Length: 167
Image 1 (spheres, rainbow, N blue to C red):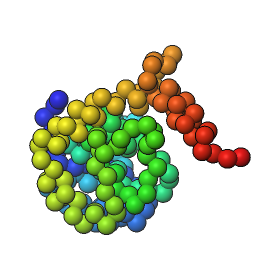
Image 2: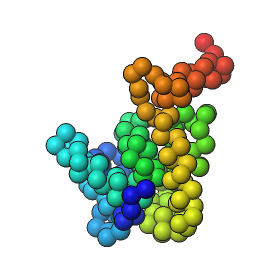
Image 3: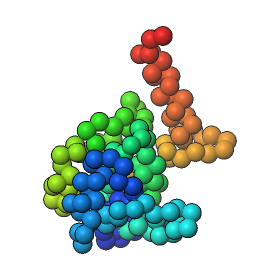
Image 4: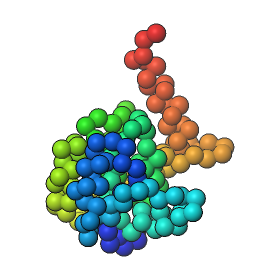
């Protein structure tokens, strides 16, 4: 595991109420790396990647869409996702226990975000990170698919849901 020196990271558009508050409250903080603008992955891929690798917790606030590449990016780069939303239908929620590899907060917690993250003991962080590494394979797409990769997770999730969806 790389040494992660930044407490939290988020870069993105302020296209939701929670993102506006996040940027306003923490944009000038010295321990939280909160950017008001999204980093262009095409021109600044290494900058974006490096910030994920240097950070313990990656903030994933709800936005204007129902999905976010930020969660997958966090998992890919081994940065603990911090889900900051009152409701978020997390990927593979019926299969994976997100409590074991992420921090899930409500939007009202944005005002105490830094305090909450700093109060997570090192032992708990290490446990979250070890579990995060274990689930990384479930979010990886392979061609051809490999057992328990994202393709198989989607198929299994659809199979589980077909029992509850009524047409």
